[in-house]
Image: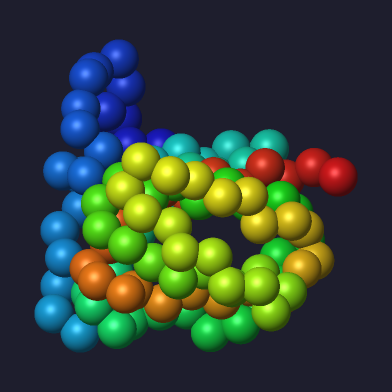
Length: 108
């Protein structure tokens, strides 16, 4: 866990910067029961299709992304969130630069 954040107020989108042609991540919380990670994606960058054994919630805090879950395309923008069900294939791509908070809960 990032101890410098404990007990302090901060703007989520200020925790990470964009990098040209890259995906950048910063883990905020790591516990046995789950993680919270912030990501910054440059326009056109993404994550290829994969699965995860646990539900994961994506909250977009800046920009816009295409998130595909089991072949269903979802456009998710700043202020919106989506839950990716455990074991369902999913992928995402930055329609424009975007930042997201990924919350993974490790239980069934």
